[in-house]
Image (cartoon, rainbow, N blue to C red; front, side, top):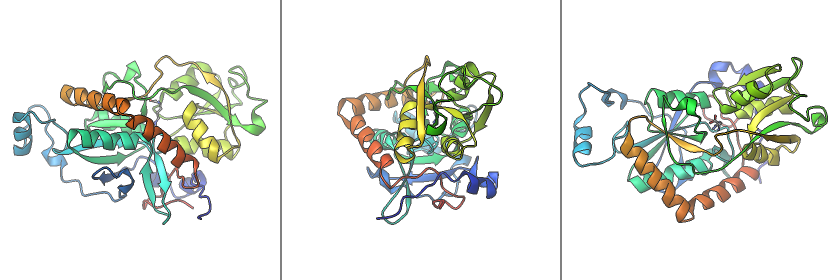
Length: 322
Ligand code: ARG
């Protein structure tokens, strides 16, 4: 059995330069129903030249697809999905027996299910969460599947699918500090550092509930957890089930309390203006819930995320950080 791999390598990440860790994206193509088969290689991106935007000439393949009533996607025949794999059990890297990191989580399993259901090949693009939002905004992907909250502020840049998962929000710290940071009041002081992921609704929660605190924006939830564990950050706003998942591997984490939030639940961000795709995605979600697949994906993701095979970050060459 492999030793447990602690992959929350913020220090390594920072030392290796920010460029290596943030912002960059890799594309992973999966085929068939094997969600564990994602490769971490970034394919050459020659498809972009054929992208159609209003006023531009559509490619022959797109015209044919439109004529036959097929779904229009950014790359014909493919379902391109952006995700941010710092968010177990939704999406994370699981380490296989051979030490290879594989994209896993119930968002990834659902993405594969939807692609199969729609007869498309799945291509997953991994970016930080704020990147998921901008990929949708620029219509570079068809879907954003990243435990995304249907926040009304995002309505101008994407459409939302029906909800496929219900989660809540929490204030999190570490066991040592749990007595000290046990209320909103306690985490609303300038000397208290409070983390939240850049672009997330948790950032809004931090501003709403801890406006006087030293709010620290970080690109990845795994960065936030690393900072909490290292004692460099006092508290953080994190989705409850995500905090619980990381807590299984890092029992020093302590969930202090629930944080009220209006837009509970996760939906899929759908490229704006693609009504047919939105309807198709909603159809697939309903099917996945009804035939028990969704429940199975959630159970499997939770098992994988709490075992020894568990990962948060890859280094710049797509390998596990040791
Ligand atoms: N639900 C939150 C939001 O939509 C956080 C999502 C973060 N997702 C992730 N994969 N890191 O803002």
